[in-house]
Image (cartoon, rainbow, N blue to C red; front, side):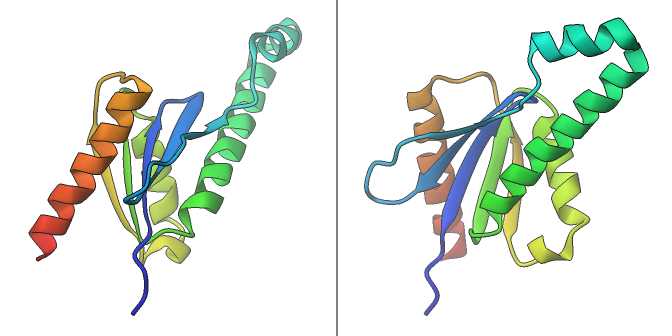
Length: 132
């Protein structure tokens, strides 16, 4: 029998906190967008179009990092206050590699680390009850 690996990702356009669901306490792993104000200022001095293109490239790389992590899980919940979770979800759905992964998208307010861990634990407990 295959072990079901579950992951919660609280994300916005700049940071994603990855929380693996299990019985034992897990630490939060963070993946961040590599586009800071200095990058923005340097590219904006050249042209706004170039800044926009560079920001899109960095955003794509950020989603690609998250995708590389997600592919190792069976169930994933994406949550957070912005539409970044929906953008990532749409990107994942275009790639058939993720067809067998159960991915949920939930709107949520900004949360502390503890609230994020509680959210992931409660979400997967509810999902497990519905499956039984």
